[in-house]
Length: 405
Image (cartoon, rainbow, N blue to C red; front, side):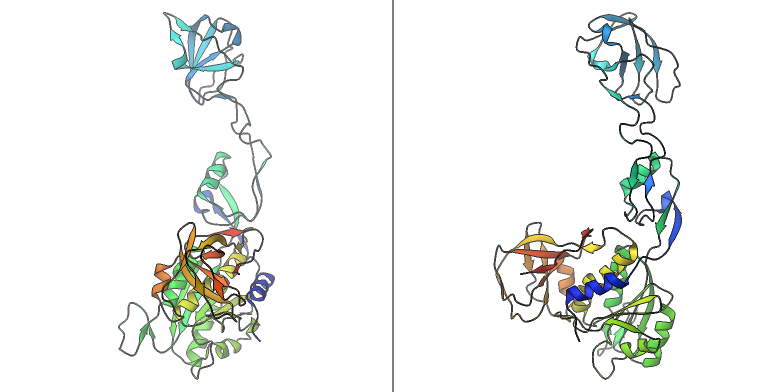
């Protein structure tokens, strides 16, 4: 019995959990997900320092001439004390000397023979960066489940953190089945086709942060498919395409059953992609996608992406739709949940002029798709729809409806 898309996604998140952890050097941590909370080990700035190249002054010297006898550079350990009638030249980032009440930029002063003339608008604490005003010791910096981005590296480096504990990236094994399929580096006969699904899945899984293993393209043979499965079972997720329908040469499901395949669902009420199957063999999750390229790619975005997100340990593990407006009217026959590829320009969504489950060109010209409710017969121009991106990541901490009505 076929399940709804919502039931399929719920089964994925109910059964798929993150894998183990490892410790990485900060330089290698980009794109990984934190396994634990990280707290600040010290204040930032670690001491009061100057925000400008200027002069350290006391308020009592406003609108007067003062002597300048010292200069403090960033990194200097100056231990003197600022007295009334004196100024200390100070560079950006240098520690504020004892007794200083404000800093005045160089360009706001007038030089004299042995000092400067101070302006009359001195303000207490002006141009001073105080210890801990950015980060306080003990403060929670990053949460468990956060994906490490470039500016998180900045934050961690500021604390002198050299190693962090992260979730292991999901390991994904890929293979296709079909005697008619050849890889792009092979020659094809006029009765054969290039395998486009596996390279697509490989590229997309890498974009989603996975470690990917390409097993190959199996012929429509029960024994050969079983051999490919044996090689793939060391991975967290095995994604296949083809051989999941009801044709005479569709052996994929039977081959997995030899290894004790436990199914969570084997059909989804969706067009295209109904024969999509999800289950597990031991600790390896299995996703069988249809062989038609467009159907396989769009269902990858819904189901494979959700499995990968659930495996990753990320807090933001649910696909989020983006609100858009229809650029034109579009009529549907209804009765089935339908995936429609198209292009989102930042405001409007335009459905591809031509597309079919077996086509490839719509994947290159589209950057998103919509999933239309089975009760919908017309998407009217200017109506709001929920688009699902295929070109960039857009996730949230809670599931939201992906359906357009």
